[in-house]
Image (tube, rainbow, N blue to C red; front, side):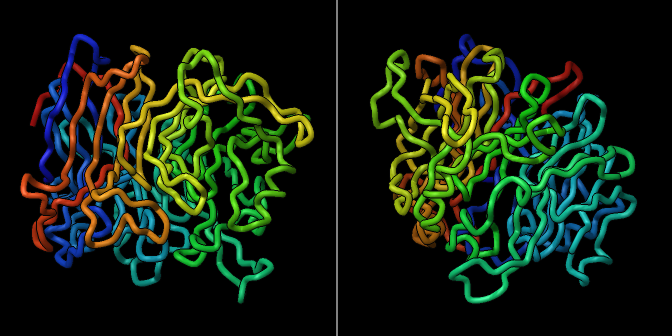
Length: 466
């Protein structure tokens, strides 16, 4: 476990519940021993102290799934509370959540005592060598590497993010390339049967938007990292966050008079310059002009679209008009080499088409002062505060460009905060980071740590601290 330092706790102003987060080594750790490569899901109590920890070894040891622990098993990604109150975790082997072709990923349902109740694995296109490692018994789901977020619907089905692929050669590309986009999949809790798929290939044109740097890195195009279904009934909108595109995207959840399920409704964002065609392509889409919100009390430098964001969600009680996200910023190539922030966009008018953009503004933001070029979380709480996770703060400050934030000379740290509407920090915990001497440890005990995101969750009366 990394060091976790509690800086601020004001329980009189905090939302109720425990803070559920995760810890894992930053990508710049040169860790060669899988048994020391610690990743875990962690609950912090109302005082910010560790109350509950679950890593692969603790979870799978002495179970039919013990062999996962011999194959670089990690727990990161989705954290959600199921309809029955149990916890849903995402596990993967060999870093498959982001190293798509290196292994496979799955889900596990556990009760608050850590007992396994259900097991799932996503099986499409897994490496042949890994087939014997598939967990048994388990429910198999036909998608490529479940990742980032999976939730349970009121009808009991699960819905989450997977990958899908298309081979193509865009103008300027040297050869045919396997492009990894994302799909949303709804599948049966008991059998894994996929009832619905929504593919980003049906919503956005690849060649007009694919960032050459990201395609060259691992073939990824969109990198969806979150979704929100709050506007499905009122507006037929499934809202997703595409980190590599720097867009918040709404697609149709179901067929309607204006289009098929999965087709584009609108984007929040701008056209970037890689590829150059993205600028013109963006102007052809239903989108939003960004204006200054005089009532927000913010400086004009906050009036910007995110170059890459995480954990998009609709603010409850806003009638679908306010969108909260973690804005990574820290992307100099997109003119946004600025500190990361928590941000709420307010939509005052929806676009009717490309010729009649909608209207949006920044209604609220909180800047922590540092740069977290990747990872991050944002949750709107019942007391109207925001729980934020600056998941990969860099020291010294670095940007996403050329993965400078992953350089071995950098030391990462996560910062989990609860911030009021007025910008007051009432809860603050830091994870990892440089010690008092300014060092970041070594290969056997690195202090460079990340966190995926954080959620405030209700605690059942029978839960005890472990």
